[in-house]
Every structure is written in C-alpha cells, then in structure tokens.
Image (cartoon, rainbow, N blue to C red):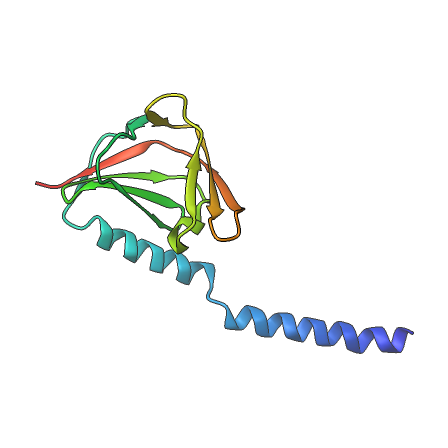
Length: 136
C-alpha cells in the first residue's frame, strides 16, 4: 500500500506545480487590474472620500476592476469603491444586489453578486468609502 501512495503523491505534487505555473500570478493580475483602473479614471482627479452615495443617478453604469467597483455617473464624474474583494464577478456580467432602506448606498453596506442565468450567488463584499473622481 505504501508503494502505491508514494507515486500517487508525487504525481499529485507534479500536477499541482504545473497548474500553478500555468495560471497567472497574483502580482500579474494586480498589475493588470491597476493598469485597467488607471485607464478608466485617466483625466479624472480623486477627491475627498464620502461615506454614502446617492443611487438615484440617471444612466449611471457600474464596472468592476479587481476589488474596485466604479460607478460612472458621467464622463466627468465617477465614484470608486474599494470593497476589499468579493464582488469581482460584476466584471463578467453578474448582477450586484444590495439591500437598501433609503436611496443611498453607504460604507459598511453588504452587497451580493448573482449570476442571473443560474440564479446562484457568486460572491459578496462590504462597501468601503466612495472616492469621487472628477474631470475638468
């Protein structure tokens, strides 16, 4: 029995090493996310963070880049929320679901992401402060 387990363990370790080598590293992903974020907010300057965001904007769009959620209100105004992770599935098209008791989304509120095809929750995150990025 021992003779069978040793080759199996070695094969499993080898397969794990191949899987790790072929997947992009966290540093590569972080650099890619940072480049995409900088492109998204290019020409805008960050302002003082606010705790709550009015969600009654007309035509606001939502985009996720890594752990950041970007609420684009207009070409000259975007609010960025660093959730710390958990809601990255918005980037692939999952819906962001929040439970609000007013027209504002605030720091500390919990959001869920849901794959609307399967109706299965795909993640959750806690909202941080909203940093306004404004253009001139």
